[in-house]
Length: 402
Ligand SMILES: Cc1cc2nc3c(=O)[nH]c(=O)nc-3n(C[C@H](O)[C@H](O)[C@H](O)COP(=O)(O)OP(=O)(O)OC[C@H]3O[C@@H](n4cnc5c(N)ncnc54)[C@H](O)[C@@H]3O)c2cc1C
Image 1: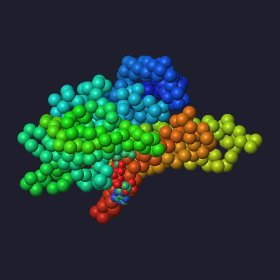
Image 2: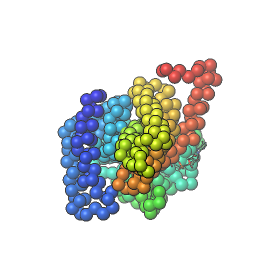
Image 3: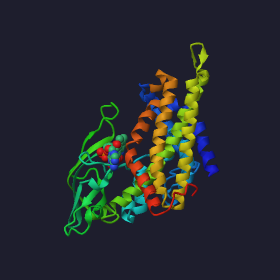
Image 4: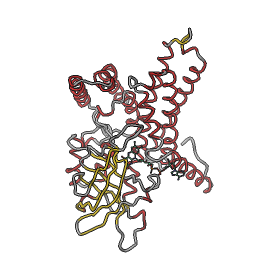
């Protein structure tokens, strides 16, 4: 594990952090064609080095060309990647990475051949289409996109939004409610995930939804009108839709928290470094009491987040059922801590903190978004509280040492 960390850090420290100006020319606002070409060439050469170092696709099993890391090893590696925003250089790009994991675990051999392998090889893109504008994403049982069985086909009708990567995707994994002519399945038992190629008749990418004041984005509104796909495109069985979604989202939440820890670390470094050099009113920022308070509180936020993430990753690896509670506690704590740390770092940097010259503004929006995505804070708080109450009701207290 230490070896993976060291090799990852070597690439990040030698190849990525010192070359950010070359790798991300658009950050300066006016990248020329030559700069874009140079950036592309530099990115591809880093990916080659990553592959040569055996660090490609940490999220995937070895049989699919990945590293086959467990959660804990992945957590330690990811914080380094997230420090530099470097996951894409190592083959981890959401939502493709989540779809790869689901297809590797749940896909049939034919589905793997058709969708997983091209996704891994980078010749296809994908999205996950679950959230609906008319129904609460926090309550997946309320989703209404329907899948009606007709012979050897599913016929899908529904309305989704915030389907990330929607403009580029070659296929979506769509969360649907299967028809239930006999009335035996019950609502949760009807949920099903179906692979839908985006060029299928009836799939309409309505728009890229503008977020955070930008006029558009790649988070798309999508309509499905009498979309017909073969029954072979269903993932798992009818009724397993919710279970598969939870597998994906549960893992995704821990990955997002690992990423937040790495990004938080970077924000922390930037804050401390700035406080050592910036003079205001005849003194360095480091000597102001409010900055010392920021540094101490941010250190505590970062350490707490890191230890919670590592503990949760260990529980997931052990298959401990209590991981569910820890994932929810983590999902509430870490994005909020991330938000606080970045907010303080921006304050210390002044106007430069909100500029695109630094990664802080992007981190700030990302941290705020994470408090909603993958289940809002409130839903996870409820899960934590209910699980603990349930334990005590049974006469068992919560074993914090476990
Ligand atoms: C940038 C971005 C990318 C996304 N990408 C995807 C994607 O690729 N695919 C996809 O399917 N979805 C995606 N989403 C959607 C995301 O998963 C949902 O926004 C999220 O699940 C919340 O659902 P909702 O927006 O419908 O909010 P709602 O469910 O309407 O909830 C609104 C608010 O109600 C409150 N609330 C909810 N439940 C409770 C409760 N039980 N008790 C008390 N208060 C409660 C919370 O404060 C919550 O924020 C993305 C969202 C964003 C912002």
